[in-house]
Image 1 (cartoon, one colour):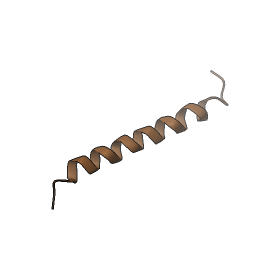
Image 2: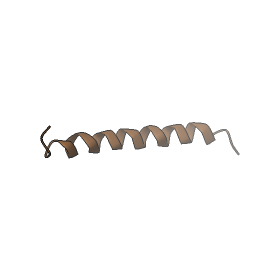
Image 3: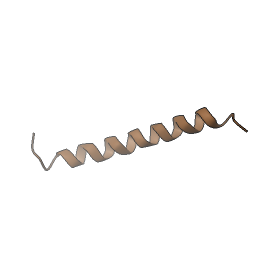
Image 4: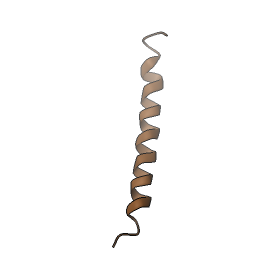
Length: 33
């Protein structure tokens, strides 16, 4: 695999993972008052 392609794949993947983790964290704690 070409080294210049790797950031183009890793960055969107990390962004999606962070978004999913943030949504899961919110969903888990939204019932806590």
